[in-house]
Amino acid sequence: MIGELKEKGEWLLEDARAGFGLLSLENAFVTITFLSSGIISSMIDEEVRDIVQSNKGNFFKYYTSLTNELGSATYIVPLSIGLYGISLFTRSQTFSDASFTAFESLELAMLITGGLKIAFGRARPQQELGNRDFNMFKGIQDSLPSGHTTVAFAFLTPYAEYLGPPYSYFLYFLATSTAFARIYKDAHWLSDVIAGAGVGYIVGRSLVRLHKERRRRLNITLSYTTDGRALCFSYRF
Image (cartoon, rainbow, N blue to C red; front, side, top):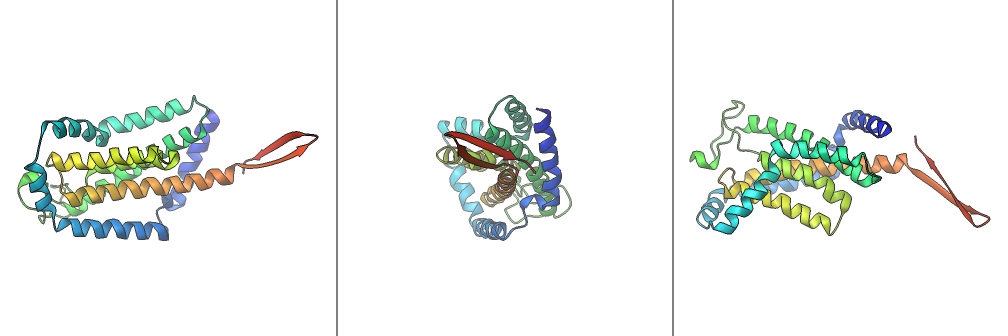
């Protein structure tokens, strides 16, 4: 356990020096995709809000009450710490790496989203000021990006990327459900949740790629057979 904690502490320092894996050509394309989607969706923010708010039912009321909490930092941050703590007592390197990555992703993504909220200062739908009301850098409005959506994607993306299909489909569905819940509760515009999803997904996936590459370099196994017996050597550097 001590060795695992020491290793992950070193990873944090290395991640910071590597820009948390965010500065890559691939991320540039993904960022452009989310930005384009956000800009286009902002043109139909009002229409989407009207459709969702005029078609509410008991099923979605209860469903969104549950999925909304997947984006609550009050619950998800302690959960991420707890899962990493549990992983220390298991023999699953994947579970341990995914849980650590999810916690780091959460903290970094929330920091970025918090800064963007202040920078944009966008009014929330229930304020009835429209989707083009911005008070930049004043800290009095905080609709863009959606914090709940950021939390859901930042937390679930690492698990989705480490576990892969079919689990990843379900995890991304849950994160998307949180985004829908924010629109359903009239807390955010469509473009807000797309921006939040972008921040959470990009941060989470970037850290996963960084950590997987580091794990690959840290564990090089050479094997050969002598007299019918397999010998394996594991090097860490």
